[in-house]
Every structure is written in structure tokens, then in C-alpha cells.
Length: 197
Ligand SMILES: CC(C)(COP(=O)(O)OP(=O)(O)OC[C@H]1O[C@@H](n2cnc3c(N)ncnc32)[C@H](O)[C@@H]1OP(=O)(O)O)[C@@H](O)C(=O)NCCC(=O)NCCS
Image 1 (cartoon, rainbow, N blue to C red):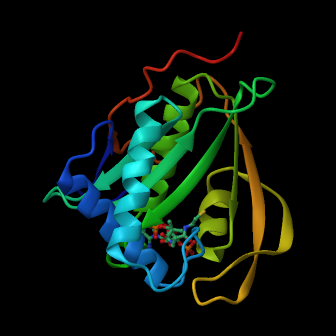
Image 2: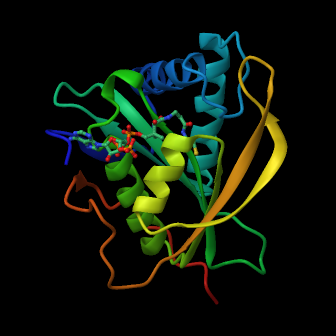
């Protein structure tokens, strides 16, 4: 487990949170991660993305989690997208699993994923889906019980413009199970009512 890492649910983003999340996003894109953005990755693009994400959180469409170190600096983040078509009320998507390069390989990604799974369960979700172009992320998801569904070639672009494939993963969640890594301090931030009928 990462020492003194706290995973927190962000419901209202102040300028400190916008800045910290933007630092993480910019670092990941500049480090070559295929996470929607191309180089050059400006701060304006990053801040605009997080402000839009906050509006989506406020509408109850998604849960936004941040991992903070002992000094309160945001070192990683993850989202659970809750709003889905009405015929998929049990499903959620995991999106934007991001850890700053200087905080990697210490279990922050694992702690974020465990907290996201708990949040999804708390919101009544029993199936999670994601796609990733990162082999580091593929190992993380596989270690936490996610199943690899398949790969789509030429799905997106790396930040430098070359094509990249994406790999689809899914995981069934069950009430009463405790996602690995769940010992990390984390707020329960899913007060959303289950979407099941
Ligand atoms: C994928 C990503 C989120 C993983 O974050 P992370 O914090 O490094 O993840 P973890 O620390 O939990 O696991 C990473 C590795 O460190 C190892 N590790 C964990 N804790 C450790 C510790 N205390 N000491 C040594 N190694 C450790 C894990 O076993 C894992 O090993 P592996 O590379 O053999 O699989 C991160 O690499 C990232 O942000 N990548 C760029 C963005 C991206 O592409 N995200 C995916 C979008 S879907």
C-alpha cells in the first residue's frame, strides 16, 4: 500500500484541485499516455477539461476521485462514469486513471482503482467497463480481477499523432466483496441512489 496516500472524492473543485488535477493530466500526456489529448498539452486545455468534468460531477453523471499525498498534493485521479443508457443501469465506465510519473509504482493506481470500484458498487453498479492503450494499466486491471475482452487496432492516437490500439476490459462487481487494496483511506462518495429499477 502507498504510504500516507488518501483517496478523496471531489465534489466541488477549488482552484487548488483544478491545478493539481491539471498537473497530473499534463504530466501523463507529456509522458505519452493516450488519454484523449494531443501534444502540445496546454494548461488551458487541461483546466477546461477539469472544469467540464466538475459540471458533469455536479449533474451526478460521474464520480471523480483524487489520490493525495501526505502534503495534500494530488498525485493521481480516476473517474466512474455513472450515467448510461436506460437499458444499462447496472453498468459504469472507468475513465481517466491517471497517476503522476513521480508517484508511480507505489500502489497509487491500485488504491484509486479499488476506491473507484467501491464507489461504483455504492452507486448500484455491478458491471464496470473500460478501455486502455497502456500496458502498465493493462497489468493493473488484470491484477485486480478485470477480464480482457479484446483489442481494437487503430482506435486512437498517441499524443504525438501515431495510431494506437485500445484494449477493452470488464469486471463484474459483487456486493459484499472487498476490492483489493481497499485498505487505503477513502471517503465513501457515492450517495447516489442505485440506478436499478
Ligand atoms: C497505469 C497507471 C495509472 C498505474 O499507476 P501506478 O500508480 O503506477 O500503479 P501501481 O503502483 O498500483 O502499479 C504499478 C506497478 O508498480 C508495482 N508496485 C506497486 N506498489 C509497489 C511498491 N510499493 N514497490 C514496488 N513496486 C510497486 C505494481 O506491482 C505494478 O507493477 P507492474 O508494472 O509489474 O504491473 C500509471 O502508469 C499511469 O498513470 N499511466 C499513464 C496514464 C494511463 O495511460 N492511464 C491508463 C488509462 S486507462
